[in-house]
Image (cartoon, rainbow, N blue to C red; front, side):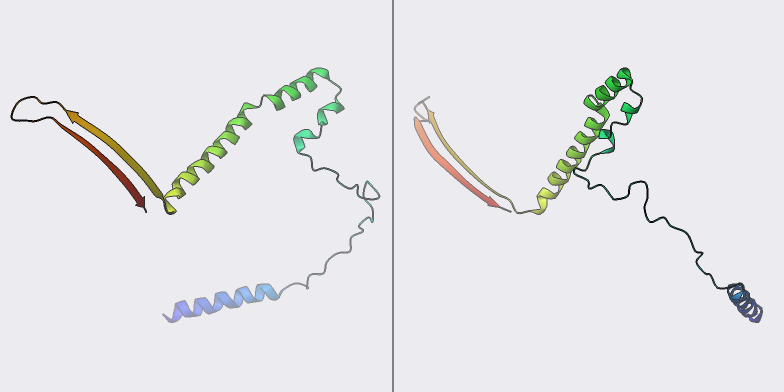
Length: 136
C-alpha cells in the first residue's frame, strides 16, 4: 500500500516538474497585410451556391458547359435525397400524431324489412340510427 502511494506521489512530482520547464510562451510578431486581394470587400448582392459559380466557363468548352447544365437539370440523386428527406419528415409527423388529442364523429342510419315467410314469423320493418362521438 505504501509503495503505490509513493509511486503516485512520484508520478505527480514528475508531471509537475515537466510543466515548469522551459520559458513562458510569447506570441511571435507576424506582419499581416492591411489589404488582401481586393482593397475593399464587395457587398454580396445575392447568396449563391457553389454550383452556381460557373467555374466551368474558365475552360470555354461548350461540351463541358452542356454536361454541367444537364447534370444540374437531371440530377436524380439529389432529387431522390430530397424526396427521402420529405418522406422522413412525414414519418416523424405520423409517429408524433398519436401524442396529440383526437376526436371522431360518426353517424349511421339503416332500415331493414323482412317479408312474411310463414305464419310463425310475421313481416316486420326496422328503422334505426346510430350516432358516435369519440374523444381520446
